[in-house]
Length: 282
Image (cartoon, rainbow, N blue to C red):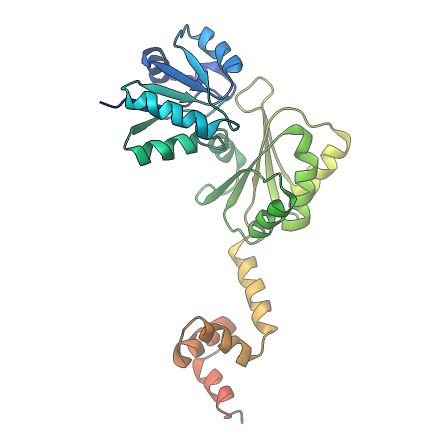
């Protein structure tokens, strides 16, 4: 009978956030797969956990996952932990989870700390709808593409960033998104935790004279629906009615439905669009 993979959330700063269930599980499993065994050793020592550990990280995530799958098939129970927070969130654990599912191996998650959710709840921005980007891509082209997508994002945006990249990321966000509201969350749950509601422009000014330190979560206001609607209206005004109709007909809509959509977009009656298209412009 195959073993079980346990996704164990660990503290993002404050050791007291370690749950009793996670401690019990880490003590009971046959093996702990850790992102950095040297870092995790300190955590294990703090809770007197003596279970064997092996490394599982970004650079061995596929080959090591295959080895872990073999152990799970043999009936071994394995716990997966990341350096801090919940495995598989901005973490190679997602690869192992997917491979376990493909192999029919049971996976369960022991909930606990996650920097993204902690920051969202502290941000003061909308929590009803949000999107998590993690770390923006290192590749310049891919990063530009992601930022372009975020330009029209109406949900609250969550981004992780390291101190040495913070200034450049704030600059790129400001250039792409404009001057949005921003909450900077730094060193969450740690002694020097900082929660700073600000704006992208004010944040750039702040770090002109202040050197970033610690790990950051940036919580950025989404574009308002009113602003998006206004941009759509401006876009439609730049089109002729014929071009506007053609856009919907290319999507497979018939003339009647296209006229209905065009009229709705432009805030006029469908009859007015009909008269225009059929020469009844008197």
